[in-house]
Image 1 (cartoon, helix red, strand yellow):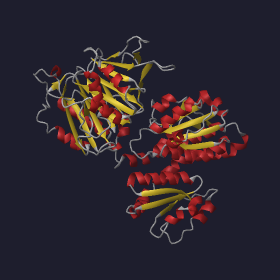
Image 2 (tube, helix red, strand yellow):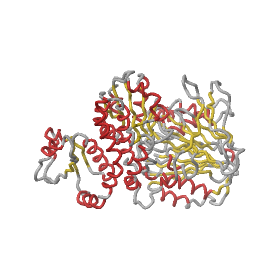
Image 3 (cartoon, helix red, strand yellow):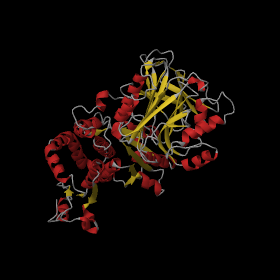
Image 4 (cartoon, one colour):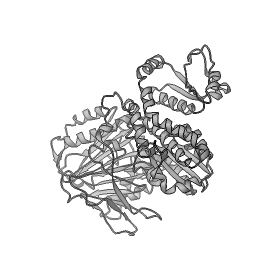
Length: 602
């Protein structure tokens, strides 16, 4: 599920231009997968005694964004050429979790048939059943099967029971989120507050892009607290000039064509735009909390999020790996002096070297990067290295100590389970290290130190270049830790030489593209596939099997070759294709013996 919303304040735009901006924003997010899409825009003004004469039009459609785009122009009641001086539009793509894919279950969701409040939502509300039951008892009617619908109904309930008519939009949202449990990124629009935008988040990413023809008057926005601890302060856009609007979204790829200036919201921040002024609100101030939100500059170009001459983003990113691994190493490893410097860890290096254990935590591909580097890290650091799936790590209430160093590996820096594991370790006093590909992400902000892998934007859902860059970053950490150990210098130099030739070796593998396609053509109709390896190659098997599942929807398993006769061999028959990963390493002879499965499709 993905969010895109934008507000133009005193910048005339036709309704058609607004549609085009919203649809293009969704198209930039299409790569992530979805089953339906919808938008909310200002409708024609009414001349009756309606709420301020304002209306909100919802347009929702199952299927692709293209189908939604076509549906927009079928609305005879909307004048596409009408110019709106101030407008706030919402757009959303949905992947069904509660309720089937349908227009009714699609976002935006509304508070009532008059669309007094509408909302778009990423995440899951875990207490929605209790809230829904309460609101039904209060007379509110529901029309969808989703968890999201309780949110606009709840804000209408709060509004209907307001103590006075001067209540602000942000106050309503603050009261609503105090009743919500789970993870969410929310953007609100209301007929009662025309031209105003309110957004908030908890456990789900949300950022605000700020565009201006002139230099911004400030790079920081102080937080306003209801307790009155800080004076009211906001970033005023109204005096800057034309073509200024904030954009609310859940991924960087949709923002870069509008602006490279972004502000990341923290959990329970409520961002409000009123009369061209952006301000950040919180209910209470907690100890150690940063009282300002910085506007940051994205180091990203539009061409990086375009497919170019490739058929798919994933294919493009596979072929970018010779360059991406160089970018990961650039400025950090000197192949002449054999020195490795990771600037993001420098201030904590003494503490890291005194630790008793390394814990590497991730999900999916990031977990596999940890598995791939565990053996080398054990060898170079001479420390016990635990590799953990974030969800399992949390389920077990794993013991963590103050002399542990915990690594949190995530391409986006927003992986929910990894983020919860990070907070679990911080609460227990462990030093936390982030390995991410997204500057300004939540994991970047909440860890004590970290390494940015510099792989460039990864648009494809199935991670490719981020995996190889995570691998290289972790290997460089091991090299840095072993720099002053004489007994490890020979092995250390061997690894550095390997990193030096790695980009060229990747190019050699990519030159096998046509041969690999021929093999794929033989296997793509199979129902199941096994990938076997041992030692360093086990992680490759896990990652390869995951990619096959993600891309082909074929059942595939990565199997440790040493375990072949302890169960997996029962799956192998003359119809079962098996991919074997064999390198001339210490396990070569063992693997050749294990792989004697004559008569099978190997």
